[in-house]
Picture 1: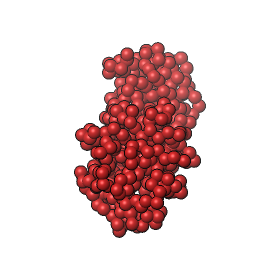
Picture 2: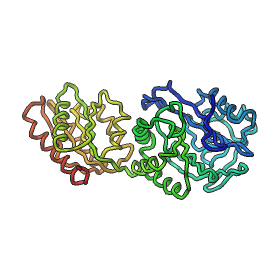
Picture 3: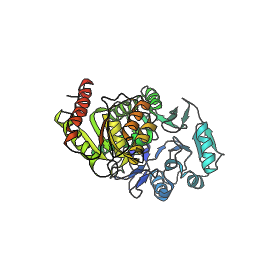
Picture 4: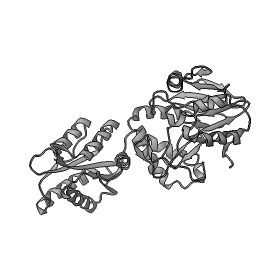
Length: 400
């Protein structure tokens, strides 16, 4: 197997994982995932990040195919999460003279995870490491999305190695570079990855983007997903929008329903929104929907409508779980509306209102509440809720 040489002297030596079904034991992987690692081969050789240890034999085969029996002088650790660092111990056994390059937080974590404290090189913001004709320069990017995170820049090749930043779910089907791949599903998978993994850290992402905008970049090498060249500007723009929490036009309707009555409200509201020109509309029954997909679309679109029956004097559990995930990510604003139902004790709409107040979201209308079964009595109320959502949507300049 020929390993892709991304640029002269820069080799892709990563692996694909089409076995794992849950990333971080949480997030679904319908297209698999890649663990990307890169070799920069000059007078000295630097390896940038490793892969998940279960794929170590493939990883070391890829390295040997790229550089043969040459030694690796440096391991640069941009990010310590185990899917990128868990092969460090095995790498150290194969290349006992290798020096591990990282910032102070990184080196502490390497000691804590793998008990390695010798043969390390501590670097700071803006410092560089010469490999001969190529240089690696290091920039800190803390909390994108761990505190030790940094990026590595090779100015001679205008290549940026970004750790998890600009990463995406999805294994690489044959190609490595964006121009070699069918990218269709990767855009939504990048948003889903951002929403689930990075979503809480919009301010640190913005600070990191300010740094990298000062660099001349031709190639972005993330630790998950394609190597970005032709689409690098689109990728940077997408991260900029997501980290500003700016939703594009569209409405997410997310609901729980035990016996179908709250679901009928959701269906009625959705049809009314469609009649009023709201596009696109994404509906999710939270009892069966993939939470990562719902989170993706909450990040992606500017309007969220949530419905819940009262359950044990509280929200329906799957609705509660979604709201807690949104709250944890600190999304500062969405056009928001709520509806709910109860049989003998009202509670759901009160908690939906409290959620909006806690996040300091503005509700575009009073919550719609239904007592017991759905029938024509609630048609007008559903119409009014849809009118309010559509009017806010149009006022924000999105109803085009």
